Image (tube, rainbow, N blue to C red; front, side):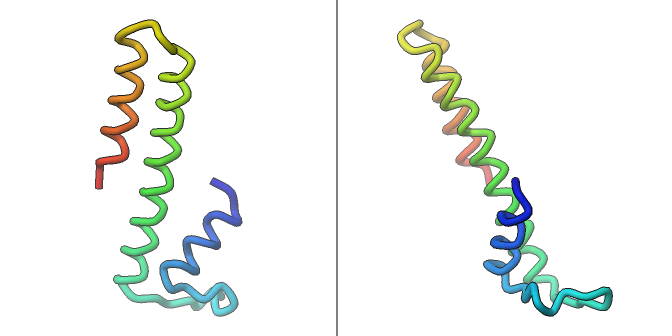
Length: 78
C-alpha cells in the first residue's frame, strides 16, 4: 500500500489532508470508515496473491481450485 493509497482512503473516509496537523481531531465514525477501507484494500491484495497462484497452477487439478477458493474466502471476510 502506497502513501498515495493511504491518502486516497483517508479522503474517502472523510479526513481532510489539508487539516491534518499535530492537533488533528476526528470522530470515531471517520476512524472506523478509514480502518474498513484499509482492511478491504489489504484483503484484496491478499486475494490477488491467491489469484496469481491459482493461475500459475493452471490445470494442475486441486491446486488451481484451492487458490481460487482461498481468494474467494479472503474477499468474503468483513
